[in-house]
Length: 84
Image (tube, rainbow, N blue to C red):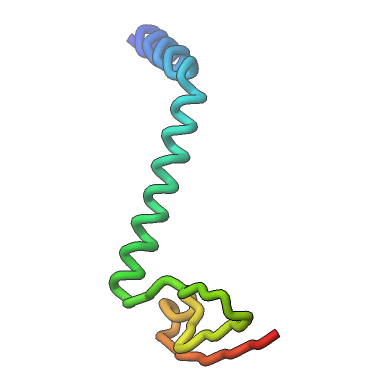
């Protein structure tokens, strides 16, 4: 019985190994989708917004916060304006 199971497992591994590149690509894509869904969920729950880009030569951050620190320790608003 053990010999038959070992033979089946070896055959399965051999067949799966043939498709390794496609499986690796699929796992990478699934990981990327998982990260994007997690970020989208956090953005919705924490009312995050996208940055607004303008032609002005200024960086203006209003109520900015570090996303990871905000989740770990609570939100702490910051304001920053930089002209160059």
